[in-house]
Image (spheres, helix red, strand yellow):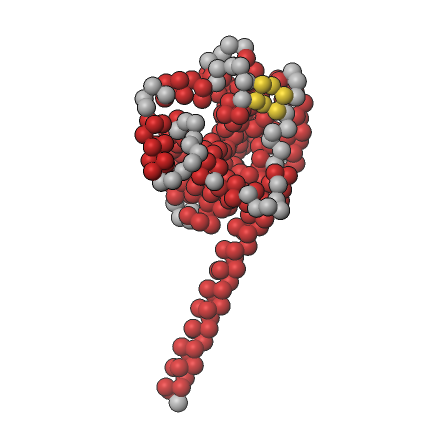
Length: 328
């Protein structure tokens, strides 16, 4: 049980990078970008094929982000220059990327078991520190019977994800970032101030998909494989992370909202892991579990708000009746 939760947190931290990309498109730009399902695989495929060609894993991961950026920019161009509906432009790019990803990878599945990935390199350095022995000793004292094979991934990826989160916060507070947020809120208003909204949308969707593809490249290296179908439903996972995070941690400021997205991705993976341990559920029910989580995260806050408003109205009515009684 403890090992399953550990693995869930580990994956949640990596997927949080993808969720930050989804946050940029859906929340900041108010752009329903379905390119995510394709660009995630693009990142995985580019990273895998680059590593197999002898490119250093870190550089391969950056190549994956660059490929995602190009895919996102193409979606933005379809919408802004081609005047295609935002939702439809994302769907068209997602479909096109399926064939493009097959071209990049050469075959539906690539194995990285015999290749040197970024996580294998990290572990080689990490094992020399003896930190695993220290933390596993703590778990043993707590009664754990199975220990994680390494703590390197969870610690290093936590640092990387937090750095990306802080860079996202900084970017959204710059002049370009503020214009990007304004574009998502009111395009007509920001256009009246002589801002080029087309360029902002293209750049914003590009950065969003760069984060998604970077996460895909890391997931491919984490699982030691890249598959052309591994991106199916990825947009739902990203939305679930955003919605769950906002429901649990709030979104009053940009820094709090991005932190909520990271927390939401981790919580999502933990909930899915716990749900799959139920006897009557299996791995094939993962998409159903995700849908139920998103529905719950969307409906519950509205129900709570409606209940608070009803309570407020009743209190106000009671106060008015009390005033009338005193007057009489």
